[in-house]
Length: 106
Length: 249
Image (tube, rainbow over all chains, first blue to last red):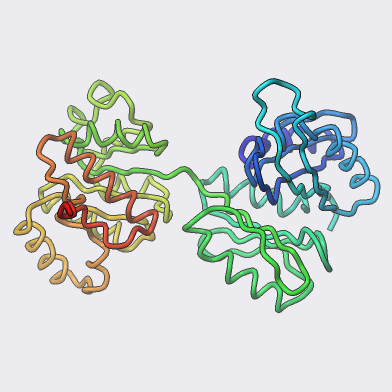
């Protein structure tokens, strides 16, 4: 959480719509641990990481849906070896990512 | 996450207060969230009161133990996540042993603070790795430190006039570890002084003294290892960490 605080602060202060993605479960060989976080804005800014690059694109798409609907969602990914972008990326596991909007109103 | 909950969590992290969040990530009431900030400040809420009670029971120990958990509460899947400040070693007495102790603690990613009223001892030259040097009497110095459960306090000031005021502050706090240097005889004397001062047996049981695991330490560096090993054992809940070598089969 600590690594994304400054971005959430800055972006919400600027009036951006912000979504927070958190790895809540991981099995097999996954590049980022449970608790790892990615924050994205409607305008396409992105900080942090939930998979070291494997599924960030798909999580971003989910985040846009979540910002549209205002409803949090849990999404699962199987990370295949082919999706690893670089030699040595430790892919091959499964992760579940909780994607939620940072909601202004009560 | 509601911005109000986020702001409260952010303040807790900034203030180095332990906090635990619980979020319903699947099942009914998805998006419900709870925030528990040490010691017992609660924000947010689950729509289902019973689910909230179950979550809170699981959250309480995480204020001390840390970690993450994904649990099932009824039909809900709930993600529990601790947000703990860095473990913090607080040394009272900038004596010789304190130097390797701080160095080892830094290697283990502890924050480190050294408190000593004598400015010529508490210097950056003697403690190149320390995060905070406080030149003050022990009780005054400790008043400047957030004494949360992730704090390990090591009292290396032999003198009762330094040691006793420090113990009074530490025993009234929730620090996770209290250790005090001294022989068995010195430890026994400290014990009777503190009993006389009105502390109970149960309170005094928190003090590790003589300090450190029994690894036969002789040099300041070895004693520092013995102390740090005991701090780790207590923090990780190791059972019977006597450190006594097992007889060879």
